[in-house]
Length: 522
Image (cartoon, rainbow, N blue to C red; front, top):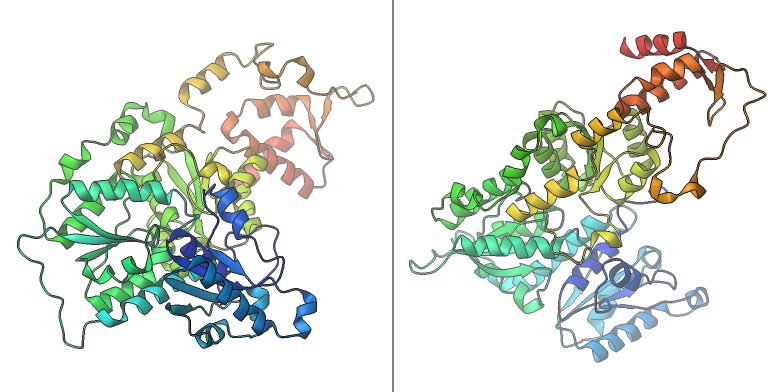
């Protein structure tokens, strides 16, 4: 573990919070010092939830460390049960409290409360948030489904001939990227296919629902980061197969429909269901030269990064120049997708490495998390958010799924809108020399007050203009630079300046520009 200013994932107990907060009739007692109590901030301010998260803290202080912190935990657990009357009590420790080794699970069991206790041992210094969510969900499914495990050699009973096929939707949590809208979209799609949804979990489920998961014919593994461990256990214990296709994008949704129909044992016309999607028509209706081969860099959780890469390359006509994830548990899948695109996957949780890679590649569009949105602003590159971690603006009031055919339309809009389209490029070229619309002019809606500050260049040679750094550009070199298309000009300028620094030059001449071009071409 290393300290960092930003982080893609929190510690594993934050993942456990996401499970508890997503569910009903569940409460989480967290042994944590004062200062680790930030659940309200995460869920009520970022996700804008109408209820407070079901988390009770012991909030011990430094002076309590000389006393009995175990007794503080037991008091907090008793109070939480008496006040909230949950059907299941989750207990665990935060990163700091883990060092005290008070054993919250053993302490809670000793209280003999009349509800199931789920003790969570989440290694805060080895694992992270998504792993914590997956482990918590798995442990809960295992605890409440223990009595329904098939005996060795026993097979799952066949569905009655007149019964509709049923499935569970697994993986959506609180603080997930568009999870609520995705669930609504996929639930509707399954109903149209004639498949009944038995349980959606963790989001909206209660412990009684978790105990009914075994009743479904198969599982829809919607978010593998959260659901993989539980789904694998249910396949082994209940004989329930799980889906592997992720319904993101037009083709991804078609593959998902084909797979769920096979698991449900029903026939369906994929092309018929596909006709409801506008995304395909929109993509075909836009002049291909506006979108084809736009260079895109993709980074996020593994599920969304893989899906985005496939949509970008095979549906939008983009050229994927970089692909990566912070989800180490699914790194193999990301590497396989990157290899298919002729790339080497970037597996890291260091945003500075990601920023350096983006600066090197100079893509025309970034698809990433809120971290990449900040990076994109610094580098002045268009960006669309496709994955957690996200901020408050990524929980829109409108219906905005990422999955299904409607989700494919949302993807098309959110990815294309940040780009400069062909007509804009044409107009900029047409008015490039205009006194009002040239590239150096400020936006007209900002008024004259926002005009750029003029630099006194009287003391400088007539043929040299200053830059923000220590280098300066000669007039002929700058004119030649401005002939380079604007969407690659930034990279050309940076490469030239880097070359000049390496050569020990103080100003950039026309010859320097040509030499730099030859240097980086070789």
